[in-house]
Amino acid sequence: MFKGDSAVLTDADIARILSFSFTVRPQNRLAVMTLGRASLWSEEYAKGQADNARAFMDRLKAAHAVREVAELPMLLVPEKQTVPYLREAGARFQADLLLVHQSRVRTFSKYRTLGKDEVKALCTVEAILLDVRTGIIPYTTSDSETISAKRGENDLNFEETVAKATVEAMGKAMNAVADNMATFLDSHADK
Image (cartoon, rainbow, N blue to C red; front, side):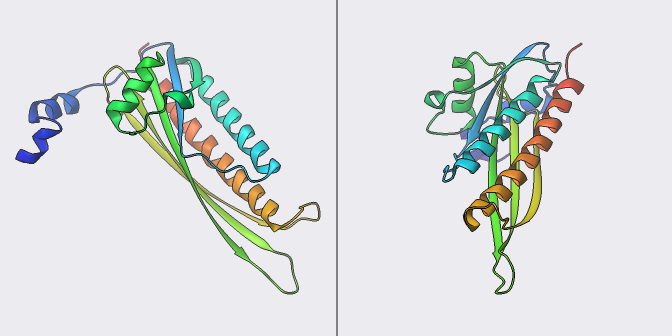
């Protein structure tokens, strides 16, 4: 319909993609890739992030359609993060499926002269599932979570309070995304 569009995909390619019926094969090897890396500026934050990543991977491993879950090594993460390059990285890692996710965090803080510092952390996690064999993205999901916190007696400083709220919001959003993804995989599995 539009001549410039055919430089990327032809009309026939688009028609074939749109008519494709995706089915999750049994016993998939799932590679997980995180876009962007958080700067680990506190030990508490680093520990929380590691716990979040472990819980995320464990939830994905619980899906019946998944036989193995592994993080895509940073050395394989392509410089250009387009579908063809992501697909190539997944294939080189011998993954059937590639889950790519990204977290965005915003924090809002208040300082009260007669009270303690307060922070609100809003985290949004987005994820796509890429079928490495076909290049189709059969599923996307996202979740946003907000956590409010006050500086506690044991917090070294206000930055630690912010880190704790950020990690908690991120963990909740990541868990919701992992649940959504596992449910999709199991509900579309070829039985």
